[in-house]
Image (tube, rainbow, N blue to C red; front, side):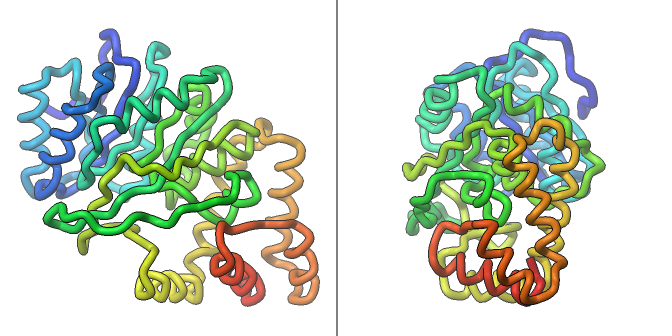
Length: 316
């Protein structure tokens, strides 16, 4: 049976949020990598979005092997991956949980992934904190490929508004940040759960930590929702999305979500949100001047050029 309510049992210190849908091909390998973590104080919340393959059967078999104290299975909203992850965020209610980690169904976690991430985030439990990192790409068969791009600029809200620097499959955050994430309701339009984590953490003057040391093997296959962005063809694909106005749509959704934490955003960043919102609809020459004054940044020169180009053609 798929459970729809949390029990009152004692929960582990770290909850792993696993969103699944038709993931039978790689799910076992991911679950095995979770079981092999050096950090053992975890529990998995798995939310399945109406899978038509054997995904649910695999989850139930691991639940039987691990026990229900280590794996809870829920019925997802079936509105896309981001909404599925956000539904899991709203399921984390027990105050004894200290850390939260997102988990994709098709990756492989290196043994130290949880331990290393929690060691970094736990240094200041009162400050809303999140960690994200680079990944190492692997192909469908698990063969090692190259690494995701390394970003050198310090994470900040002026970057978070226009760029996500760390995939959700790498993110680990504390419950001090969770409080603010849960203010964004599930019915809100959410394109990217991980991008929203980066935006909220920096908007409230929390701490977003970027690590250049990967501990996730990020599997690349034709069903990837986002996938890698380091190859020429990947960049062409994203450029086409820019021209179609997809980035503008995503920014509109993100701004709508930020309204739910408006009172928690720092005064400085409230002004940034206001100016960014106005900038998107200003006349061309006014937009050109104000865009430079606002100081929005992407992590490299190519990205910065794309940002300026997108604003000038009103696609951001």
